[in-house]
Length: 322
Figure 1 (spheres, rainbow, N blue to C red):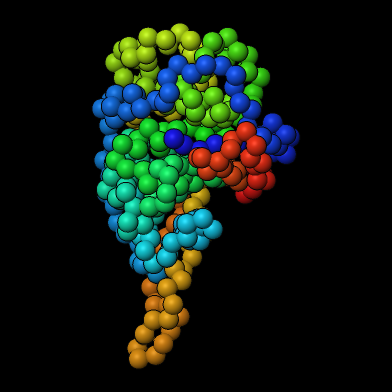
Figure 2: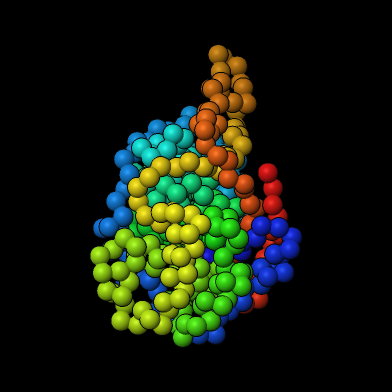
């Protein structure tokens, strides 16, 4: 349902993420769709309001995504918005294609259900009407391809990749701690979790969020919970000890990723004061972070699309940048 993602903090970790390592264990369930209702009912959206950017500007990330080789879009059909949440002084900048299944109102509501501590590790989101109904996380940016109003679980999963990458003392999925703890489990949560340790951590993050926030927890809905217990409990233990309350609603953001560069939307010539001009004159949006927010070190990691052969796909370069 989602996408494969690789995460690393530096060159020393490249080898462990060169290819996904399939997990040779049975799946408890085909997918985690049965958790959607409980998650959405028990993780309320924080108060928010939305304001649109001028049509002349968009984040560089969104412009790059509009030029995708597989399904390019006219950048003029993609609108950029600020989403101001009550729990953070700096808005999130997101982009939505005019024909996207997930509209801005829905995106603002669902992303607002992701706790502030976790939401802070996401830079941008773009929602487009691409084929497949999949999603992926590239460098802490989430792309939603034809994902609709039931996409909260998807956002949690993709956010889980960024948490795995750099919310804890070390990346979780390639760690000895993860390998040791999860080796005791007889199964993986679902088919997708078996794709690789990175996907297992992302799906286990979804389960951990359910277990923390939904009455009765994961054992209340999954009879075979004990078979995957070490996976979601390891996520809970690490977040509790190293990033407290990162999966629980409440609190405020105290750190953020810096936004990508703001660029002009290439919409061709425009008539200005009787003369043809390459763009209209409008003020560039302010994308600076509020004073007092700690800057999260950005990571440049690339993920493959859902549907590709995850066993043979070579991953792109992974590097740390400022």
